[in-house]
Image 1 (cartoon, rainbow, N blue to C red):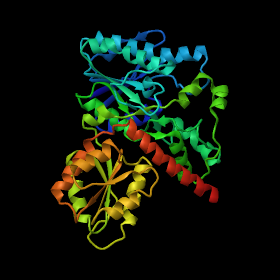
Image 2: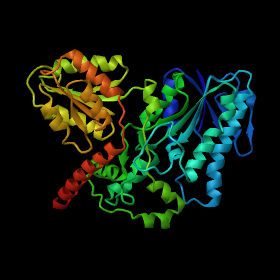
Image 3: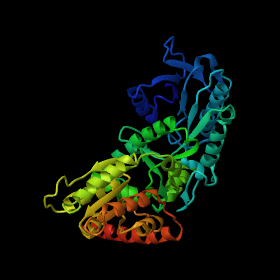
Image 4: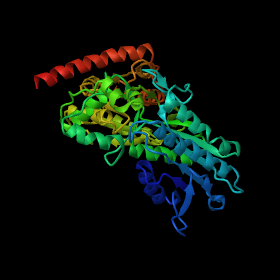
Length: 437
């Protein structure tokens, strides 16, 4: 495909373009200024409303990522105007121009953000959830509406409601790492606000999924299925870096220093990628077993790959006797760290495997025997790990359990309140251990 890309020098664009070209696509960048006569760069000026429509004709797809960094400084009136103009005006110019083309692209994939939902506490937010209030929520609503001319002309339009993109090379995580390495990291405010996040590699894969799947249209939450509270994020980052995270930043200090931007940092957005998963986007599944569960693990790997999920096998790799914690704990840690989305662990009865997995902070591993318990494990417990007993159930039942567990969403509400109490117990013991250490 011939793909036009704006924002190609940003964090996401810089990672996306090599992936597109490696898959055989031809990428043409829309850049500010005069790139000269190069065929792979097209000049445009969103502020002045300048874009040569003839240079866009014949493109198969457009990926629009351009927009001024919202977190680069305090939100003065002038800065908010620049943030808004770089998104709304640029998107409208692009959408109107594409809509007038003789040979229009099949799809326009345009950046947006989970800021669309505003501060919503522990409410689970899917693509059909109502918009929130505040500057970012209003901005995102207008940003998405600016693409209407393209939609009206018959172009498939996708809005990427992206969460916090995590990468060591840029973005929020890259800015946080030096602070945490110095032992100065801590939660923001009370730390109870949910953070919807996504790894940079997953962001790129999700964009490619939207590009190649016609069923993907309208808003799409580009986030991990497992949002975390700011307190959890802080504790995990500190644990990975082996640094203390005791210096909390009070909300009042944030508001004095950052003004209106502080409200966005303290807001709680618990987004769920319902549309992405419903259209067949592959989850990354960690799988592990002991010797008794080895054969069933191999059966389930085949099922997961048939369902187009990415499988990471932590072992064991034979039926020779082993100690299950050596394999189960790394699989659970892969989920807790965000390297994988969910984990399946298999043993003889499944009891030991569930116990081992649940020792990892943030893991909710459910031992299931049939589809009903698997469904409740997801609806009521938000189980991000599944334990199965190979000596208790057969392969057919195991496959049914896995399918139900993968396809069922968490209900939230009163069930979230109960999980919050469990999380509070984990945090209390974590603080106690830290103080003793």
